Each structure stands twice: as structure tokens, then as C-alpha cells.
Image 1: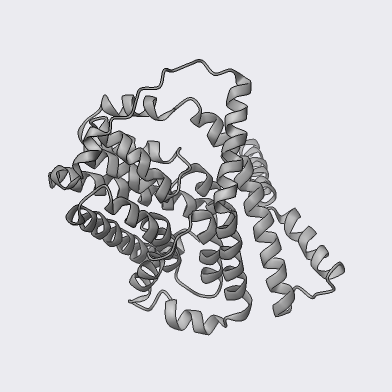
Image 2: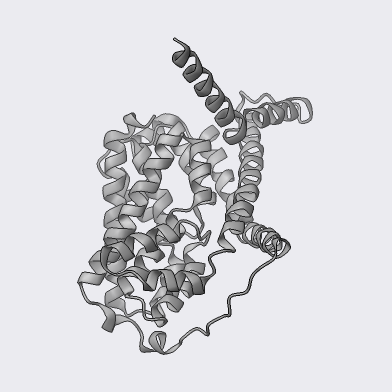
Length: 344
């Protein structure tokens, strides 16, 4: 009996922390009062609901993002690229792909900023399959995105998303390794060795300054995409009728997943800018897998990053990479649509 009481108390505390720290229900209520009393808008109306959605999501994402990036960057200060290369270099085969995918989760980079690290790892002699596992997981899955996914959806969806993202990174890198495609990497990549930076013991102040600078740098790079993403999400949530979204992107539509994935690929944003759109799509009736496919297409295969990657690998390798990741995203989307009810 006592164990049940203790278990119930622990569960209640976890639920309270989740609602107040991640979903920020207190912020939701504050913004609602602000919209109604300061702007004189009813949040149940289309205009008032859109303004509330926009202000609440923007504030929540920026607050969570700042705290999370600070913490993650502080941890990252112990793992500079040189140390990461040494760690990866001591493994081979599938274990190396797994480790590369896991290391990608602690690097808060978009797909474009991951490519210089891809060049550095390849030039340091790491197998290209290992570097591609890193290249897939780094923009697709990171610790901050896990927390934000849990705050917008729930922990089951967040953990499932991370799991399938890592599986895609490991399988994609392993396939590229088995295909022996090194000859399709531009020759200058192998000759552009990165100089070794001496490892110095950083003081606590140095690490805190690094974390603070990372927050500032990342916020500067993503703020516009967050505003655009939240704006689109607010419009979908309040102005596009649910039956319209369901008719086009409902989970019973076989074409909704590939349509969402291919729609996302030409865009450029990171997961923080696409999460509000995914949230609004799901609330309006789109399948969970459809929304996640759009989000993954934007983050993993954005057009600018593919243009950059085209400068360091030849077209055949680029086509293999895009094909593997696209097929993986579509399979993941169909799986979430089929079994999404287990995660809600």
C-alpha cells in the first residue's frame, strides 16, 4: 500500500514538472491574460487564438532553447572536434557508426554547419560511412530537440523519434560503408587535414563563456526560422480548417507521408523552426508520422546543405545519401502513422 502511495506521489510530481517546466502551462496562462487584457482579444477567436499561439510558442521555444543549449554546450566543451575524432578513430564497423550517431546528438548543429565537421572527420581518415552517420544524426536528433518534442507532444513520442533517428543514422552510414563509395568523395577533402589543436584545461569561467556564446550564436542563427515556423503554425492552427488538413495530410491518405517529406526537403530550417508547424498539423488532424516526416525532411535534407555537400562529394554519392535518408524518413513516417496511437 505504501509503495503505491509513494509511486502515485512520484508520478504526480513528474506530471507537474512536465506540465510546468516543459509544457509551461503557467506561461500559457500568462500569455492568455496578456492577449485578453492588453490586446482585448478573445483567445477562442481566430485572431486572438493566432496571437496567443504565436506569443506562447515563441516565448516557450526561446526559453527552453536558451536553457538547453547552455547546458548542452557546457557539456560539449569537454568534447571538442579533435577529441571526437580520436574517440571515433578507436572504433570500426557498426560500433563506430553507432558511436558517431550518438555523438551527433550532442552537437547542436544544423545540417549546413555539420558539413565542415564532416570534412574534418573525413580528412582525418575516418571511414565515410561513419562520418555520414554523424552527418545524418547531428541535425536530425539532438538533446534540445528531445526536450522540445516532449514539451510539445510527450515523452513517448520524443524518445521514439530519437530512437528512429539514431537507427536511420546507423543504417544509412552502414549502407554507405558497405557500398565502398570513397572514390566519390572529392580528392581535396582527403588532403585538407585539419590542424590538431592542443587540448588545454579550460577553467569553469571559460566553459561558461563558451556555453553563453553558443546560446547567443545559435539563437542568432535560428530566431528568424523560429518566428516563421511559429507564424505558419499559428496560421494552420487557427485559419486552416481541420477537415482541409485531414483531407490532404490525414493519416489515412497513403500519399501524405511522401508528400510531406518531399515538401520539406527544399526548405531550410532546423528542428526548432519546424516543430511548431508539426504541432499545428497534428492538432488539425494530420497524421503524426506525416508531421514528423515533414520535420525530418526539412532538418536532414535541406536544399542549402545539399548544395554544400555537393561541393565535397560527387553526384553519385550525394544521390545515394539523399535516397537512403528520404526512404528512411518515409518508412519512419508510415510507421508513426500506423502505430502513433501507442505514443499519444
